[in-house]
Image (cartoon, rainbow, N blue to C red; front, side):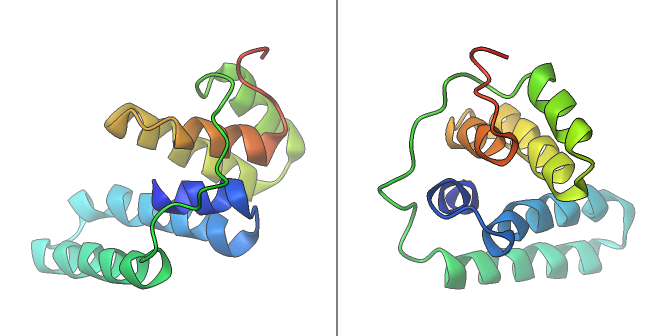
Length: 117
């Protein structure tokens, strides 16, 4: 969630990868040896601690709604794999945590407010 908040406040590729990279490790973890999965998750936690030690930026706006099919369609239409990955990571993050900052990040990357989508 901190990574998504940073992306909303300062939408750049660095902050985008803070969210999508964590999702990639989470998706891979069940399919590799337990020790390797634990090491990967520990590395993500350490990187996020270093990157986001000050917490979420105060400037993160609230989303208009929640990630929806329209956000996925907009990401796909962009032909930008980074948008697609971020929208999917945000959908998963919102589902797991309920934190609306994931919806705001998906809206930011696509430029589509989900409330009207």
